[in-house]
Image 1: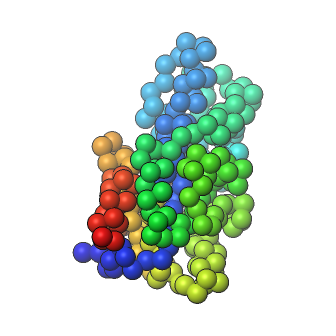
Image 2: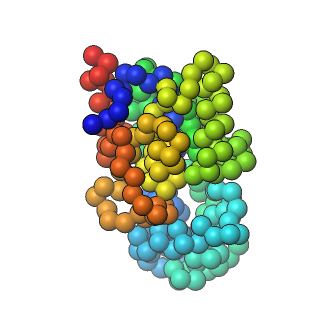
Length: 238
């Protein structure tokens, strides 16, 4: 059973890319657009596996600027031209990545009950596009440019804890909502937060474009969509 009722939180903190923004669909669409110009077909899951391997390396840059480098690394295996201009184009496509179908409505519902905080490994320029696509639901936002680090680094989370303390709250007042076991669910548990796993890939095997965790962390709350979380909150606040 969940450790705390949903009504007990003042804040919901969110992973953005993968939880609210459909980064896998956006990435595959960007690659397929490039591939179509050369008459090449791309298997989406294969492309995500290649992306995951190329993304998490010691020479990785901040996301999504790193997509230009990643493109050059994976293009040959996909039968694409390793042209730096195409890598730059893939990076630029991020500005058009869309929210999941339920994200905007769910966030609008949730902001009626909580202060919403974005915690994203994306750079600030990309988050600005995502925030607009989500209809600006956030009370505060922390990007990798702001924190100087990426989740699952505890330092990222500690900056958020320091922020809510300025508003008279603590980590106990936050429910952390995310799809990534590796970046969010495991570390939030280790830091003593209550968490909520949005299992976006519940109908698809594997971890797709997200690195697999060393071990699975059972979440405090578990939904397969943001809509289901919003509905659960609405039921508790009746």
